Length: 304
Image 1: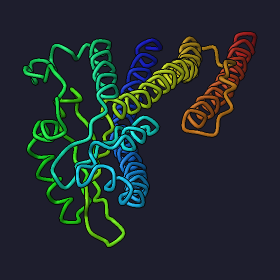
Image 2: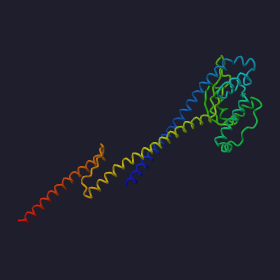
Image 3: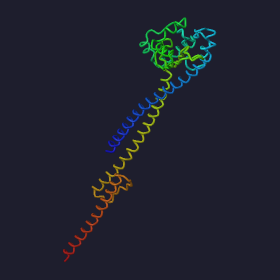
Image 4: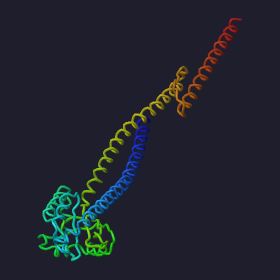
């Protein structure tokens, strides 16, 4: 009985812990994912605003050197090198500035990430025709943009800011892209800024947080199961003690007592068992006293 009750209590407690861990893990994953994406989007919007302002302040200088084709400006490549995200600019001639060295580095990082994560084969099946050669001209680079991005760029030239998550064939990965119009000193939209950040980095951060949570939950479950085993054996130990006392009472050992002091239902049952033992002991003493008197009475009558 002891082992069966202890096993059941341990299993029930473990099941509750498992359900609790699954619920907490799911809620944490959704909340942490949402918070991570929102924070990243907020940071990218703010950074895109600052970069757009810098480019707007230098628009006259870039146009004086390159005309409307500011996508050829080295200043944009400089900003791309010093910024955490990838900086592209589409000018009014629909030319796209690309830092080819930065693009190649980003492609290698994405490929290494897929190889380490084991996702490379699956990704290749989804995107079987990645671009092989870098675009030769800014015009060709713009034409290689996904249709969804080009549609958003046209909205940018109409003064609309946007943020999308799309697969970018040139960067060979899913990118979180923030677009922002770039205004000149007269308030006219002269170009559109595209700020890219790989989604894989966000996923790594999310999974890192989830791994920490899972490890914490596993440790908590292990400690909880250990505690449940201890409590279960302690609980069943009290029941086993009362069972032994009941067996002694059944064998007419009325001096047996549980001596259990607990302020709960088990304690009340133990006190009731002790009261029963006391009354049985008192009744046995009275019975022995009456038996002694009976024997003395019979002995006196026999003597007379």
